[in-house]
Image (cartoon, rainbow, N blue to C red; front, side):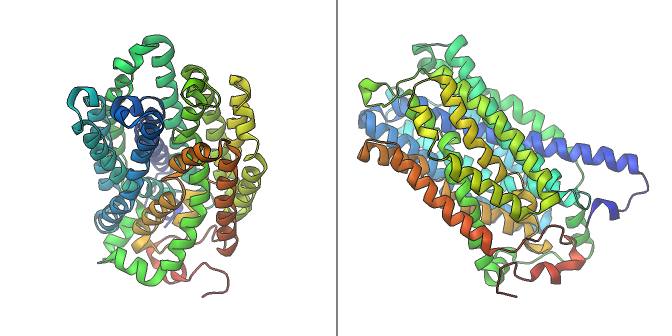
Length: 459
């Protein structure tokens, strides 16, 4: 069901509602991903020393990045739960729940004692809180993108679906910016390790209050309202999803895996760790934290612009063609990233990450509309959430850990570039297998059309 067919005789009121939806989805996902990326960046910068130091420098780094990956394993559970209830009781309610869960876990991380203070209980509690972040992330994305896409006017789903998507680079920009402020101005040097790293986590509490107020002001998705009115909600949406659409879930997850594996080179804290590890401790570059964080923050602006552009462009040329542009851009820059970082020059590092961000944006901005158009309305929340979560596991979950191991084993980041390129090629192939469903009707009355498998050679 589109906004143009929604029951309203007041175009001005509808435009105001659309603005509220756009604001609510972008603010909510910004806060959610600020929390998520803040953890990933801190894992690369300080958590190894604060929570895993007895394991030794190299092992502590691997363990720290492993906690980033562990949360991905719990994303499917969050997606199952949020998808089930999102398809039964609505998108809006689940968005408030996931935001509260993420904000509470992040705030508690900011209060967590270190290994030196409470011993083994510190890393255990850190992992528990990271798991809660993973549960939240698994359910958040699907609800946010469906609120945006299902409210969108015909022919503008890519644009509206890009609003929750740009919340991701904005979250990275905020996380990197706040950390850069703390390392460079407020708490430079040892003060950052002692207390400065906690401040950005505690700031999450204020952001969550703002996000909940904004999200509660938005109306429920018109598609879910229609489903509820016609009593067409699925009784067991997850069971139906895997019984009828398991192959679609796998292929769509693979398309996201390529984006996620590549994206987590910068958003997962790996590049920050790679560039800042002192040469005396086995690092290859040895840069200061602040310029690296500023370079990543600057590149996230490029990612933001390209993400929104991809959503807009996909309304004109189709989701699949936009993906193809993104994969080509990724493959053209993946082998440039680390040579530019290895110069140790902050400006060249920025250039490398910014070039990489072009492909990141053009394989991400259209994803909200793309995934929403793949699944029938009654199981759509489950479909997009679970597919996203599985793609994240296949792609980004342990990408930083794998990259760290590859560099420690081979002594060069070229091996990492080949690893990321191989995942991209698989994702590119999955993209070519799936049909383009740009503009397919999303309402409950079109379930039969939506249920036809969007896979070449299958009906």
